[in-house]
Image 1 (cartoon, one colour):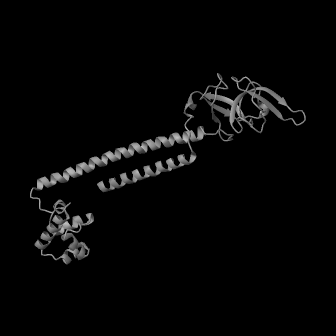
Image 2: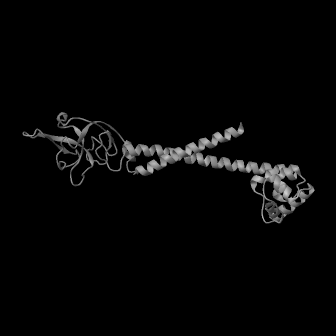
Length: 267
């Protein structure tokens, strides 16, 4: 935009209407100094004033922005239509990009919740959880790599030799990790009555280090779900999950608000 041309055009149209700078300023509810700046080409009317200014001077907004009269009104209308069409097209593109992005976030959010509750990065004893991924081939072929084991809580007295159980290992190499192996022997302390289970992976050559007692027993294998654990290598942090879920919710609420606002404008 050429501020000087706009200023001269405003001056010309103001004088045609027999208005002083002060008169024009009062009608626009601004200072006459602002009008003076426009007419000297030192500034341009704010976009919020264009509609009112065009009505007072009896010109179109496009003529104000061009700083001259446009005799071909049909051409002027075409320019406006082209601008609106371009803006509409741009808006549609951005709405499409926004929807795709929100759908991606929503999908990521759902998957993140799935991984968070089914595939924690460190598998620890959890009384509320019954699903455990198989992360090694130690129980092949009974339990294959990436299977999901469904574990049922059971009293150690009911465990039999041959059962596949889940327990929290106290071995040096796997301390605190949940292992799912087979019971190969069951012993009982005569004095204390404490029951001890010897465990071994079907694919391993030696028994697991340490014994399983009621303190570190989780439960017995009830059934397995094949292949579901193939997504296990993806590591997810709970803080990141929470952030993305909140972001998805806020984004969807914002989109709903924009759509509602646009709908009200159409009404």
